[in-house]
Image 1 (cartoon, protein in one colour):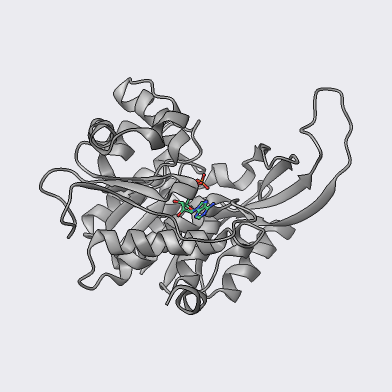
Image 2 (cartoon, protein in one colour):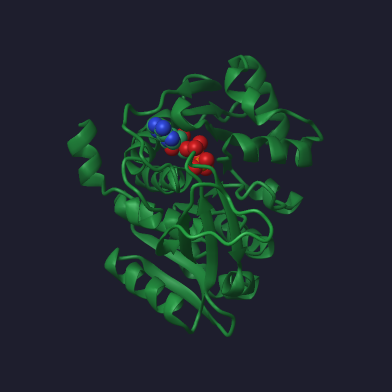
Length: 318
Ligand code: ADP
């Protein structure tokens, strides 16, 4: 079982020729749909084939109803705190070059409490993998990881969004972290007091990147997602998780990407699902699965809606 603890948002997306400037009024093609890093990742884990629980906070409104209906449709075991706050929302502007500006209204997401997480300790104790992000209060993430650790589950932290603060306590409880390039550099500055340019990351030699990863999470594994360059894996000495090498790259899948929104979420949900399936597979095989899964998700528009099913992956990549 995978337990995801995190956010649900209703995304409101506008496609615009250019991003709005102060005082400007623009019109663009609009669509709305489910999102939030937590929900996207839970949807990916469930569609990748894992029994999945999702611990979150929802408002008593249309957004909350949408989340409940979608979770039921995907067979997700929903553990929702019912908040008086509105369900989380995101306003997303996308320009002609695919760049975006995002405004979040956390609403109910900010109400997810350690006490509520504690009420679901039995579900957490049954999990093989517990996955969380930084879009809900860090104390709740800490509570989930503490319970997961106590029960022997693997803890996976997706340290996103980049400007969110991961506490030292949460960092210490993470077995695996999965930043993208921007998030890696942001957390490296915060936790290791080192400045690095995100654009320079993919070009670094493996040994150099490995050394940075070891500074960032000395005790655990680091998986940096590198967009169309796939990802980079770095393990701590003596904890290779079935791999032959302490660090290596995995190439991205050959796909025709049309929308990379939620690619990172697809990667995280699929990685958690594959790790929970376990078997004798080395960590590298789980990462390769997540890479293929995330790659396929970029061939369709949307966040949670674009998550493929395990059978589609098999049909496409064998
Ligand atoms: P984020 O969405 O958090 O910025 P990335 O852009 O690093 O994350 O993408 C996450 C993963 O999605 C990558 O590691 C890769 O597996 C897959 N991916 C993203 N963009 C592409 C692409 N253009 N082609 C193939 N795979 C991609």
